[in-house]
Amino acid sequence: MTAVRLPDWGRSPVVTELARPLPRDGQVLVRVEAVGLCRSDLHVIDADRGTMPFRPPFTLGHEVAGRITAHGPAAAVTVGRRVVIHGPWGCGSCLRCTQGRDNYCDRRAELSWAGMGLGLDGGMAEYVLVPSARHLVPIGDLDAGEAAPLTDAGLTSYHAVAGIRPRLGADSTVAVIGVAVSDTWRSRCSAH
Image (cartoon, rainbow, N blue to C red):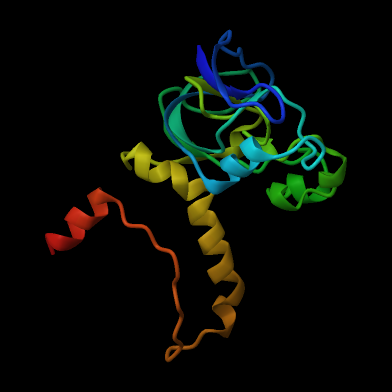
């Protein structure tokens, strides 16, 4: 399979041919339909050695939408289902991870990665291997190009609003800064 990998700190990403991963245990293999390139990817690419805990080489990309193509025997998923992948992965075994709160992993400081595309192979490839089905969210017929950025850019915004939501009343005003509108949404909005 073709993948875009960071070969080492201080080097440009390279297009590489790799063997397709084979899922085992509870792992799930997803064929990538769309992957976002966000500012975090650029920070990783531009990082100096020692500024991040990650160990190159690894495949970039943490905003991913795709289709389940295979799984290990312990994964209860449906082959063919379209999904987005929640990218922050923790250790998988601490209390927070077992509660589905990998972004607050108790062992984060010990890990040499932060998840898919951030120290572990990510979605800038034809396939990505996901360690657990709990990182998958079904998207039905939602456009993959619109769904992929929701896994990071969308969740970041949602997380910010969710944190203040209890303090917002019916007469509250909220400022939203930095919204980008896709051509698809622009055409849908102008049609109404």
